[in-house]
Amino acid sequence: MQEVNFDEVVEKIVAADGRYHREAYSFLKEALDFTQKAVSKENRGISRHVTPKELLSGVREYALVQFGPMAITVLEEWGVKKSGDFGDLVFNMVEAGLLKKTEKDSREDFQNGYDFMDAFAKPFWPAHKLKAAAAAQVESKN
Image (cartoon, rainbow, N blue to C red; front, side):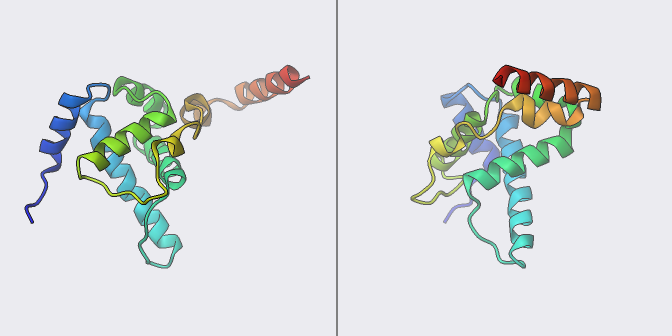
């Protein structure tokens, strides 16, 4: 079997679906590797399929480590503006043969995974801003 060249395949994906920058695919591949290592470590070195929920969590953690407070800006620059976009990226890669999925996996698994502001900006807000946001949320529920 011929080895797949990741960059060549991504160029074809981007040509067919221009919503996302090619760097988003490279980032997602790195975030998946990061997540697989974490899952394997939790399972005493046993590797297994990463669920969409686990991948979203790993993407969040990896983005925060790699980009810090700029994570949301970088992702949006690449066309990634909501958790569902990660599902589209994943399934573009699945359809191109770069990733595999199980029968249970679907694009919908990535919908409503998290709010980008909560996931990528709030971790860097100062304590007083977090308290004000929490108070406003409580007040809006009343």
